Image (cartoon, rainbow, N blue to C red; front, side, top):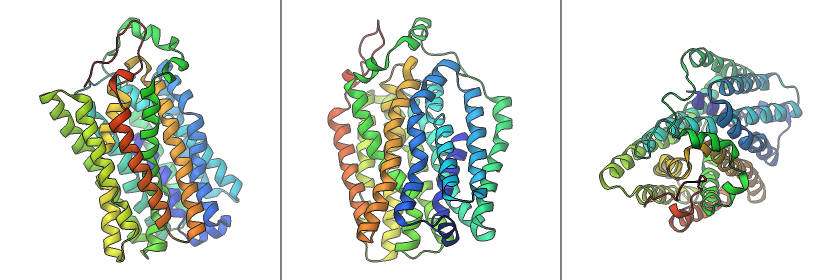
Length: 403
């Protein structure tokens, strides 16, 4: 639920950026809209590694609660900002606070689930992460149409704070006992970042995460504008098709994570099975290029939904493989923090490049062609560079023996 609310507070800006009163209030060009979408990820990237260290050191419950409060309040305050500087400042604050979400979530999953069950666990987490955009886009559009963009930010921001009550009452730091041994837990704070970064697998996962998230962040930041401005949908219709796209990736992510778990339990071959699902997802997502060059609106909308939904085959399995299965439990928070820098970099580059290419060409075809190129690069990296023997090690432990 925390991830769902976080993504609602990320995507509501994308709906606002399609509305003329919002653009006129802040006097935004296409390039400016790219910068606004990107601003969140500058601070998000900066705080990834520190937040990973925080959850490894202090646990999940209290850091999550503090950061959750900060980003909800900052999101609500966007509705009161009088000028562009205030909008950018609030987006930077939201990015810094939301940096806790992924390291905290994966820290908890890694210490409570085995490799054979991690796909389902990550699928459930991603269900919330993808439901956020699925619900957030139509909700933001409805609130803007019903009220205005100012009240939309205030309502979505402050309503999220209600989740703090059950979190503080029911959440526990770690649930089951840590799966790492006491000796591993003692060593975890002493593992230097240079040792983690010396692993070729870590660098390979950064490429995969960047390529995957380049597409997803395009969908979160520019897809509403693409549907309204190039395909002629109304604001309500845009919200509906955005809902279908993100609902599709959420459901496929959950089902494919569960399916991979069942195959692994039956046949073993953890890395191979996860890889097959990941590459299949990249292949399905590449159909975005068909949508970019579709002549009819109906065909474009079909590929818009199909490509993002197909990427769900990658979602849970890639996360389970790159951030859980191949990573020792005591350093999951820090490794995930490093990996999420690549995620944030995609969030910075994708909206900026889309805005620049849209300004230069006047069409979304060029930005979508670049998405296709990154999807191909991601698939090739998975096939040739994600190798278990290159995984990082904890002192005193051998290499990861997975196939």
